[in-house]
Image 1 (cartoon, rainbow, N blue to C red):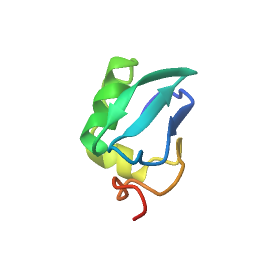
Image 2 (image 1 turned 90 degrees about the horizontal axis):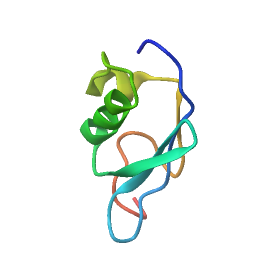
Image 3 (image 1 turned 45 degrees about the vertical axis):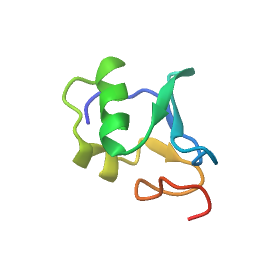
Image 4 (image 1 turned 180 degrees about the horizontal axis):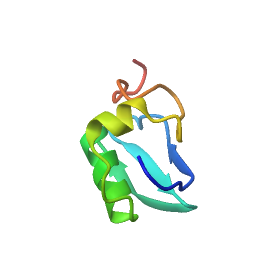
Length: 73
């Protein structure tokens, strides 16, 4: 993943999805790593794919890593 923007993926909400913040702005609710990758592409990191999201140390995962998408799991 080229470039660097502060990326935070928040814990899963009780109703589903995880908020994604990039460079201080909430971009939306992600329901999987594909959604996170799309948000990053829209933020200017055009070469990001799902594998990059899974492996990146530039993403701060709160409340579980890239395999956690349901609250309480």
